[in-house]
Length: 401
Image (cartoon, rainbow, N blue to C red; front, side, top):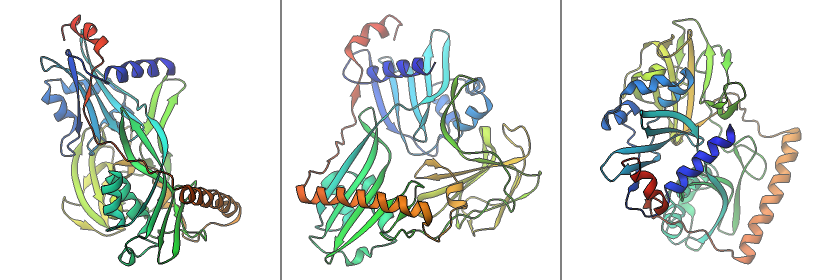
């Protein structure tokens, strides 16, 4: 079954490759103010198609709304043939036209992940130079975010040096998601400042001390987790891909929900499968989501403090009983909330410290090799145009497209 998904996706991706007269692929950035239901209305597709999904997948559809790039296959007569719309970085909504009407499913995003390097001398600033020389704004943003807790960027001078090793997911020739920086080094005033990413997803300095010491609080006074976080898992019984972008916490109806951190309420209202929802935007591009509420207290535009009551638990939306679905997102990418809730700020100890030191030595050797050999940086292509494979022309014409 898994293979059939991959074969079908391979056909899709071959279809979305180069020039043809029958149909074209349109690559756009999703308007975060448009819901998936409004997207369906744009093409006169009945929103009841969402009801063909199971409860979990209907909730995932509610997460569409971040500024990801999505792809549409449009016939020469303007008819939508299919769409691939990301939900995070692992799954996507696949909307496609058949002889009997449109169908909707949740399928994995097929991507290639490659490791890239960046080495450059500073002319203006680290952020500006990464953008101008490497054509990668997301890398510039992530580099600044990762190092700002350990480096004073105001003291950076001309000809100071930057070296970065990072992974990047690629989808249909375009970068997907935020670059995953493994190690970064800024040499300034003759001193090398390193930042290392450990297996827990956090960044540490050379001594194994965590660089970020402010973490999320609990969304409920007492957390009883009934469903953990998963990004992509093949269900052996249902024979389909499943995901749960958050944690479900058991709670009686009316239990106060607490803001996990200081922030601004950017959404307070109804969201299809999630029912009554509040979203809070926090520092460093974090966003939290609190779903299935019985009553909303915080309003859009309101600034809330960590621990402040923003609403009350319930079972609105597609829910089998009273609980809180708590989601955490970074740049639109779902991440496990428990990484920030449970994490302590005492640094690494014991076996973790030994593993970290081993990884640190490995990455320092890589950085030295990049410097000694002056390896070329990867410069990103910004071309977005994609067309349909010529041999698919007959396929579409036979179907009246």
